[in-house]
Image (cartoon, rainbow, N blue to C red; front, top):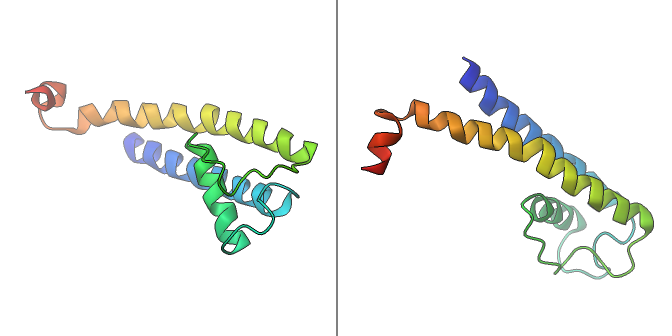
Length: 109
């Protein structure tokens, strides 16, 4: 039962981080390029996921005229994503070897 709670925790944390990122990218001025193609809500979701996965293409976000509140948001959002999400992901991945029949030996052979 604890393993299902770990997966639920990772999904909940991921969804909460994406939602916080979405709100920040959507409402803070200068977070998304002015005149970027597509709907602003879709771009905000895209930028949130791209930032959390540390890919950061820079195609739609952030814009060149970002305010200091946006810069502060990006720093804290990136650290929160790494600190609060990567740890549980690693714990969940480490528990998978116990769920595979034969453990890690059968995976390697």
